[in-house]
Image (cartoon, rainbow, N blue to C red):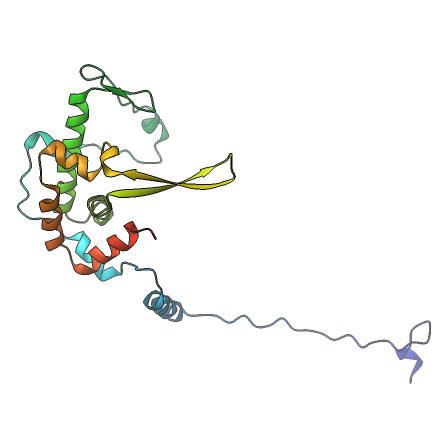
Length: 216
């Protein structure tokens, strides 16, 4: 063995191995998209595909005549750009108690019975309006979950005292703005309205709503 291959103690010097970095595989967008589609098709989660969202973009209710005093004024409201911080901060929503105080909520706001009933009725008709509008799939999805939500809803709240979450079961009668109570305030038959909406909605969307609203 040549002395050039020995160290100061006479031990052979290891020949350095030059390692080349592994070539990174470039995955095409088509491959990624196909993998995602396969994952969604095999997944246990019921996901709304684009074709289902198309249904939500179109009006689900037709000839929905609502009282004029409950119709939305959204179309006449000026849009404030998000980057205009001064304009956003300058917006103040006035609050004035309407009628005799009937109940005070957790935020310290006083509600009269008339004010609560008016808000419930307005929420009902505004929700029906969302179902009759176009290109508002997110709003329709929220309304459908509101309508088809179970009578007993479960809230999972983290309790710092015990270091884990607790499940609070709330009945629809105990939530002021549940679909059940808003129908009562608007003097509408909740089952008739629910079935009317069900007939105008594809079965796939109803299954998706029920899957989202169901707890095991």
